Length: 359
Image (tube, rainbow, N blue to C red):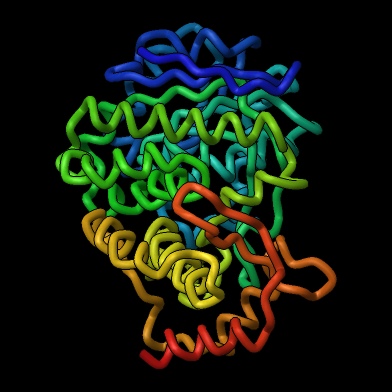
């Protein structure tokens, strides 16, 4: 087992990474009170809920099963968590346990931030994307029909328990979606890791245990360092959104139901790299290798054919990085070096979007 620490003063917490960690007492170790609510979805609950409940024997423990899918990451679904807590009489000493992917983790974290003005919660991510990204850093939110993750809070968990054994039951499409976020870390700040990914992407797609542990650990190290420096995204934490402004537009346009988050981010990262090259920032010679890596990871390289340049601009204008009406993007100066910038013209952005949407 590897243990990392997210250094946030009094809000610091550990990330445990290893095989077969469920049932080993790590979740129980971080529950301070006598009550717990385990929130999952049916797909995950069928596989792993019994192991978690066995670990929590002796507590006043309840469960809640949510519908599966990004389209259910809404205020209505969030309210079912509050209802369960109230109906079972949970008090301020309760702990919420998020057993699932990014949708479950985001909603449970937001519920924990709000219930009785804040209670403890623990992340037990069961998808690769959640393990390397959404479970770490305290971003919690639900979607709105007009924009993704627009209603939420920064709220840190007590611990993150990453059991790589759960990835054996992960559908291949979900594995690919998670690899998008893994590749992101190499692109924005870790050129050595990017080169390792180029050499080991086949092993990751084959779910080689040691390769996965290394990729997850290195991703969490990068994420933890960025979060420690900028917890509430006032500066460099926004670099973690490479590809996300384009990707969130894709998700919103397709009603959060056709593309997985990681798929949209994969296409969004390719778009960010291409636009960076169009601006003369990123060497165009880097684009074919990036496309090959994303393709080897099973990720799309282009947006949905039905989206127009105007669709993108409208939806990107609602992004959380927008300041005084100006779209800001995470773009690449080089592999391993990203910037958050509005230093481009609207005409250049429209020209690029028209070229990709008409292709």
